[in-house]
Length: 268
Image 1 (cartoon, rainbow, N blue to C red):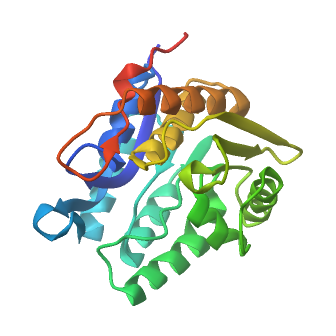
Image 2 (cartoon, rainbow, N blue to C red; image 1 turned 90 degrees about the horizontal axis):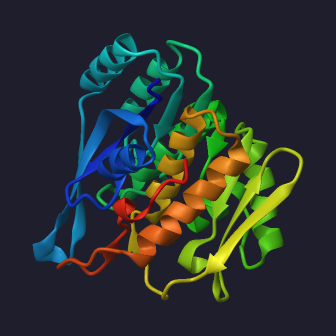
């Protein structure tokens, strides 16, 4: 029996984030990946690797969703970078077209290729139309600060409080990714399951950002949920995969390394 996982996300041409990471992660975890592109992001090597952002036409997004959902009975989806209010409308309509067992929202609040006003409109639409639909939300340190309204996330208790506040906005489960911004020697993520906080902690591997870590974590949770795993087991596998992928990270001519999903060997 084949398990299916679906990603609705942006393309990042170097393969270090977004749609490409999601499909690599699904494949590595033994899940058949399907996807809808929402935007195309490429770095500009001539201008300090800044982002170039091009949204996909909303009707093309609707067409992709229609084709995917007609092709297979899919009940688990990851929502990644959307980037524009019109994109969010198209995705919200697509999600409303059928029931879902799992909607994993990686709430990308900032696109560096957008003007500030457009970014704010996108953030507002995401909070209003996508976040309340989430079964699982996976904000990073910055996104958790923004969504929770907290001033700092400097302790595990802070991470847990942020997760609870974000859960109040709709998601059943919230995984706050402490990442490199969390102080101390450990990489700490917390899961709020509606009743208690579970902490996932490993020693940090260096002090530099590694591209694709957050995308990989959210995609791995998606894949494991698609296979029928419970949320705690899904997060543990995701944490293990990200840790292994950072240890085996891929260097390039970019000013950052990227996670290597292929370094992880599934246990089942």
